[in-house]
Image (cartoon, rainbow, N blue to C red):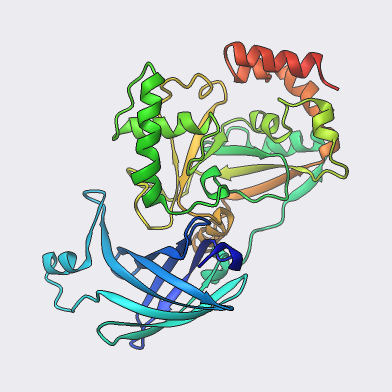
Length: 382
């Protein structure tokens, strides 16, 4: 499992035992993994979430390895407990394995293989990077457009008055929805929670007027603050306004020349998420291995941008967000996510219209930063 084989990323699929038992499997391989991976086992029948450590080495397109240190996630304590301790506490009479050997074949799109644990049980597995494909669902619906700016505004009228509709803008339709944490080549949230967040919290508290506690509402508030200052997090920013989303989609903080320096620039994209019937849960744990996408409202301590940008955050442990959404759309026979593409050449019209609406860097970034950004865009626009 090394970067030269391009195995890094999040792999999703299933494992099967000869008795027909099926487990959803998520394997997280980071670019820095150096032969190590995190294996998550999710039992839909019992709701049990297991985690184990894997180590392996490549021989061409094949790799051999071992999984060990099996643990079960306990939602009541937000901790992992040893699998043996879990089975003993719940009077499970089936012996728990300690480790398993596996061998598999790897391609850029799929991993297939088999395993045998120390109890002699055997099985097979198949993994892919597409969540929808792994779950047997169709891929995402095509985007609407590309549109002119005025056409886009007319399309947005259908969302007027609807509750819990959220918007997100991205510079190009060539990029899928993905958190900054996952874009950085990371996917092991347990390591992130145990190693990175404490370091972040310690240094933010050294310069912040608000003291961020390690639990409760402060936890997400800290991540939201860091997200708005370019620190990678498993949060994805959304807004209640399609026009705030357009501001960021067209990179209105940059000059016209910076935007147009790329020839044949791809259309900008606005995502629209109807979250009214999206499955919700009380409380969010970054350690919970169960695939999840939840919309949250972090407290805005020391974060004056949060309210002017009409922000809502989405937490997820999924790299292929759109594939995950497509899977739930099929399961519930309901469309949650719609994509709108707007021609890149419409930027001047967008900037002028948004300025007339009062959506500028000065209003979205309160303080000296917003004033300077707004004047730079207005006075140094070439």
